[in-house]
Amino acid sequence: MNILVCDDDREILEAISIYLTNEGYKVYKATNGLEALKVIEENQIHLIIMDIMMPKMDGLRATMKIREEKNIPVIMLSAKSEDTDKILGLNMGADDYMTKPFNPLELIARVKSQLRRYTALGGLQNKNNVFQSGGLVVDDESKTVTVDGEEVKLTPVQYKILKLLTANAGRVFSIDEIYERVWEETAFNPENTVAVHIRKIREKIEINPKEPKYLKVVWGIGYKIEKL
Amino acid sequence: MNILVCDDDREILEAISIYLTNEGYKVYKATNGLEALKVIEENQIHLIIMDIMMPKMDGLRATMKIREEKNIPVIMLSAKSEDTDKILGLNMGADDYMTKPFNPLELIARVKSQLRRYTALGGLQNKNNVFQSGGLVVDDESKTVTVDGEEVKLTPVQYKILKLLTANAGRVFSIDEIYERVWEETAFNPENTVAVHIRKIREKIEINPKEPKYLKVVWGIGYKIEKL
DNA sequence: TGTTTTTTTAAGAAAATCTTAAGAATTTTA
DNA sequence: TAAAATTCTTAAGATTTTCTTAAAAAAACA
Image (cartoon, rainbow over all chains, first blue to last red; front, side):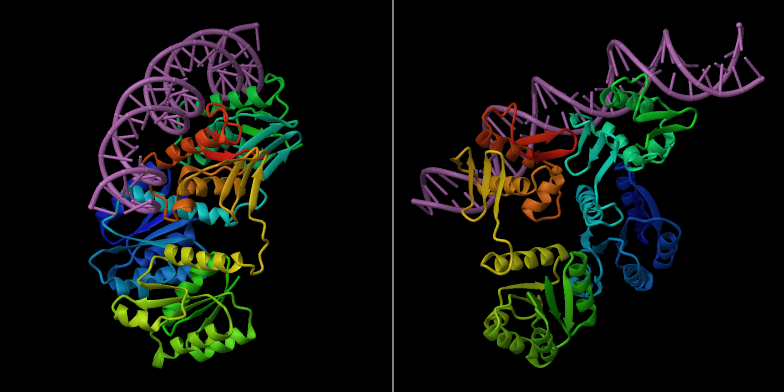
């Protein structure tokens, strides 16, 4: 998930970025409204955290503009000292707001909440959250995987990988890509992690892991779920 | 559900509209009492959000008029700076009111609360507020829980959690999500609260809490009521 | 075929999550 | 206001998952 943080105070900007990065989000930064608009045009942003008081109020107007065109959730920040009445009048269009100083945990919680809500009501996601390929069924509502009707218990990481692959059955994902999309981090993990997880998944969903029916390797390229 | 928002301040009007639209409500707008009356006559409105201070107090009088004829719930808005005692005197006829500035989440919560009440007493909604999964029955009308016919006494929080899960049996809820939906706050509870409640619920509804039949954990993801 | 690269596999250490219990704080009730 | 009930916090231990390592197997390539 990609988050744009917009604040003219460099320190706060950095601080927020660090919190979010630690949580696995990819963070884009901007120090004023125009920059923000540019970032949003050029990148796929899922959530915006925006300070209200920025040079010339630009940030606010930018936000309203954004909200008119794209349906990106916005969390507004305001200093406690600022006149709250005024802020309310201006706060328009935000999905949530926080006063500074804020608790980092609270920030994270609100971010998660917004992203959850966003994807929950069909933001981008396929409304049908049951993915299938032959006898393999991944039900994202109950977080349940079945093979030929038999339920298979997966761990969270295993589940996420399998869901990614099954939701895009037929498409090959490189290890890098799997890592990026499941761990939600850009930095590639130099170790063997993904391969090991793949193996574990095979152990659970394949009758004969040596000759996998569903989870295939495309040598030197990546893995995919066979489209059945 | 159709909601009429009435405020002479365009910005606030827009803001509230956006919040409500994002929540899936159909929003009608008016900037004064007369307009509001017209909208209500011509459309089926389920809830009104109305600012008190509008040109010439018209909004308020309009509201009272509306309330005399139709039984549409009204949420009043007032600026904190305004004299609250006075407002209370005038506020008659409202079902709820909020002071500005308000938290958007709070607004949504209040809206939902009002609509719930409205539909609860025979409005339009399906009166099916009995949720069941196997021997577990949550009757939201009598706020009663039974397991294999035996009544189980739950505390309010326990009840709310169990109702949420049972009403959505099969779906997995993360701890954050449970917190958010039961406490109606932007989730941010770094502590163990939810887990403890889950444990208490298990103690009451499960024969063997160690091997729960109904209330299952999905490791690393959350909890759910098994769909039986 | 021999060499290199990539994948598979197993095992154990490290990290994260869940369970549980007990007591403090808060809220409700009488 | 006191008592009771409920809710929240804390912390330790159990459990489960995740990651790393390293060696063996398989595939590609020359």
